[in-house]
Length: 334
Image (tube, rainbow, N blue to C red; front, side):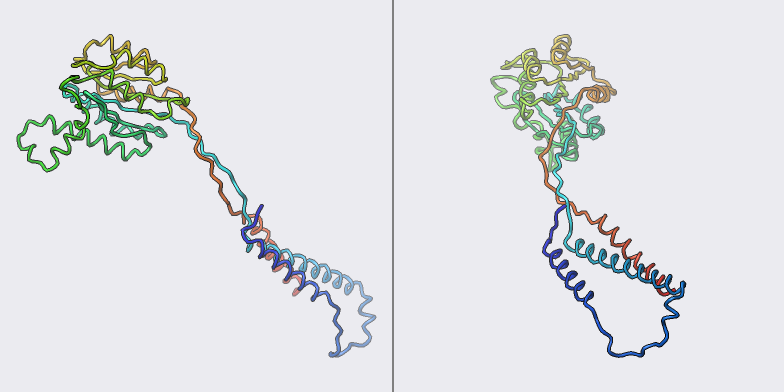
């Protein structure tokens, strides 16, 4: 136990010692009226008993008074303990990796709509969003700020709605370009040469969006695409899946009814120890349930030094001392 203000305790002890010395000095009574023939009274058993009780009570009062004074000084000095705490969490890192080419809009819309409601059920996880078409964009880095993630999912949903709205009045909305470009900006870089829906490149880019891949952590990607390659990628889906397996990233794939080369898609995600899901109303819930079954990684946060006040025991002793003094004073009076 340490003191925040140890000098108060030292000053208090000095004052108490001085008070004890002054109190124990012998005093002589010069004034007053003497009572004659008290020897008879002093020999009475009852008198002796009361005198003995008085001395015990007086001594006890002095002891408890001394304790109360010492404890008061101790409390003024503010005792505390130093605690070193290291917060630990068992956690997962999860990325939503979305093919944002127009052919996957319906699938993405349903997925995002469901994730808005279910993302908060993945308590403790860090969540991120990566989107791709010709090129990849890290839309939301890994974070445990679920409000931020939810707001981003709502923006994606709104962007898909605007992109598929056939009402000509949609173009007159003040936020039309900003909303649509939320998922288009950056994802079509070089599409005149490389084409679009470069699926392998999108998955591999998402894998390398995880931080500190050398650390042993549970990493998961929820991957959506129709697997309709329309260009020349740097990596095929199989090659990207091999990279995922190497980096120990589990991929859960989601595809629409019209998904291309479904068996190849299923085989690729299976390579990562993941699973493929046909897009249904229960798909997202099934993915969440399967994610919950995966092991969690231990994340140790930075150690913190805390100074915690510990007045409880001294305060209880002070209360007991004061209460005892009150009882002793009543005993003397009675």
